[in-house]
Length: 119
Image 1 (cartoon, rainbow, N blue to C red):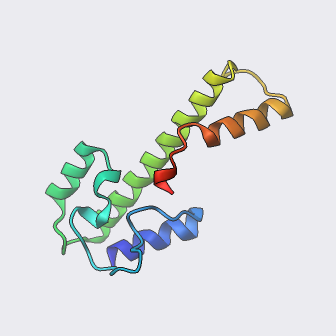
Image 2 (image 1 turned 90 degrees about the vertical axis):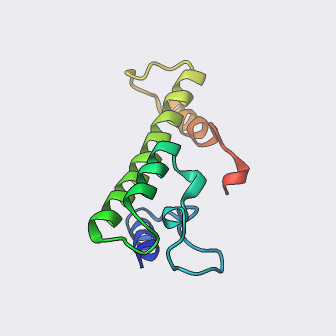
């Protein structure tokens, strides 16, 4: 139920399919490592989750903690890509952008760090 709850949260709130949550033809039952996120989590966070939760014990607070952590990781990655795009385009992060600069920045941000193995 925890995997499905978190999956539904991201679908409803952001329209995101978070890799490792929704099973590909598999079961929604709990798995090890926590919620099937495994290598998608930084090692320290994965270790904390494994210490805090076992495969059968996710309370509402635990689900909220995992959900917030995943959301924070995704946000941090988006910020990193945006900063990289600004650097690549040699744009000051404090400058006002023209419409074309904004389009160029968005395109660079989307393609920065793009890894087809994550699709």
